[in-house]
Length: 48
Image (tube, rainbow, N blue to C red; front, side, top):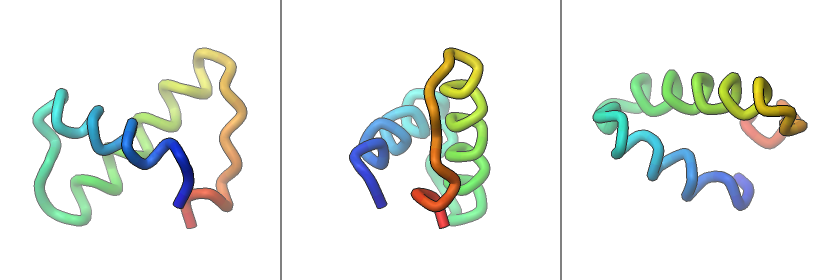
């Protein structure tokens, strides 16, 4: 993926969302939304 993967995984652990593939995907989506709110530009292609 990209350099954010480790941050996303770390965020999953901290938020108790580690589990199924679906849960990780959901957590990534939430993380992307959080980052976008802080003005980070996230390319969707990085997550496909």
